Length: 128
Image (cartoon, rainbow, N blue to C red):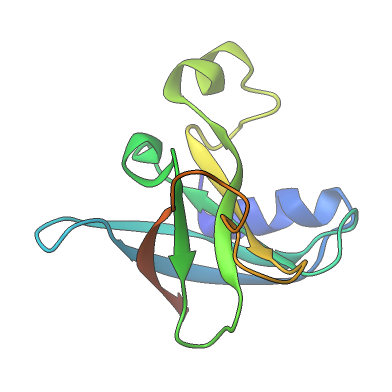
């Protein structure tokens, strides 16, 4: 499905301020994950969310968070649909594998009480 269709789908749940985006996440010096998606204001939570269409969830989950030059917050994966889950529940995942990214906005670092520090990956968001 296209980003326009994704935006319409998000709007059908009451989310607002939906904008198409392209995101680049620098996983290593040699690997960058690039994906299309949408930024939106969630109907259910304060703050913005990013819905990214990507099957690269393994590269960007598991004790990782993201930094953005245009945000003071750290960002984290709030949820994801694996390729298997997307196939099993297409009505809930009509775009295939995807991740939801949210800002950590409760103060402090996301891993401040963890035994092991999260890896911080630079993330660029381009509005298209």
